[in-house]
Length: 197
Image 1 (spheres, rainbow, N blue to C red):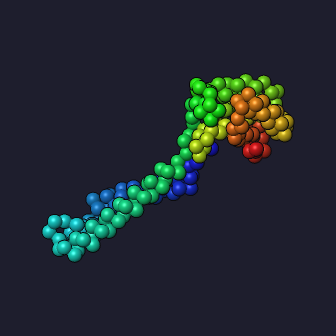
Image 2 (tube, rainbow, N blue to C red):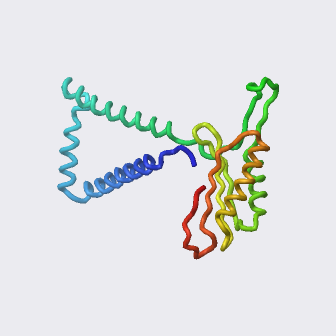
Image 3 (tube, rainbow, N blue to C red):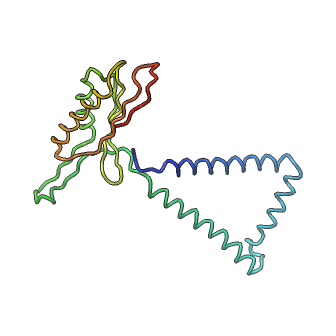
């Protein structure tokens, strides 16, 4: 529901996990196998260009690579952080009245909207259970409604009923909020797949 890029997040987790795995296996090998320790010492000698006793040209080249790698990692971190969504929010509508020239402010908490939708949708006979959450998506608010229907309930009837309830909420709030309706599998042992409307 939020703007987080799941592919980037999963790729980053896999890369970090692989790096930690390689470091852990390398540490074990260096401690237990003589050839691994010798290889480690050879690689350590190649890093002498980063030390104070290295020549100017070798040191400049080595530090250019280190700083360049750090810069690339910093840019990737900024890109990932800038794509993160806001997640759940505490308010649905915040209006200071400046657009209409009205003094005062209006703030509607997400708990009120969640309670209103849960009460109205939960009263439908087709609904077994539900969850309502409000998220920030690209700077605006959106509502996610996850409904688990009773066995044998029609997804079309649930969708129609929820659409009517959401239309009433939009009329009450004076604003249309995006809504994701997810109808989960009904009852245990059901072979139906989840539906998203």
